[in-house]
Length: 123
Image (cartoon, rainbow, N blue to C red; front, side, top):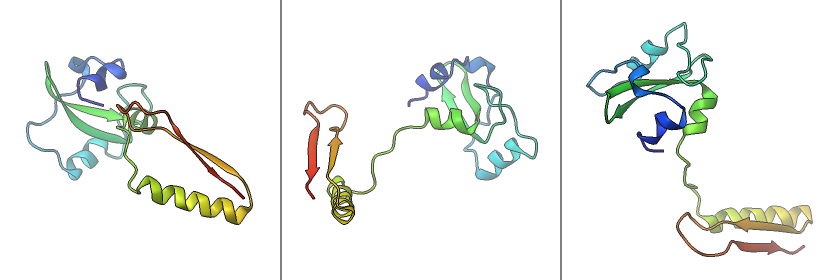
């Protein structure tokens, strides 16, 4: 999620976020910010478990303190680190060992116009 969409997705006004330093923040900065008494999550108010700096177009660098759930809800989707063929091979082997028939539906990467491929692993 890009920086412009992030505050909007959390219904936040960047002006309400605390100003952040103009230098790169370190892990030590984050640990000190979260401290022994966690700050409230800027989105929902529960204790923040993570913090980072976002550079907003109209308000400059701001701290974004989030609880676990809000952080996960706004995390960028990650690409698989294992090739799809390797993942399917593991599934095929597990299905064979379990003696079951499995149908795996695989969606194409975003932007591709192919229909989902069905992979059926017979017993």
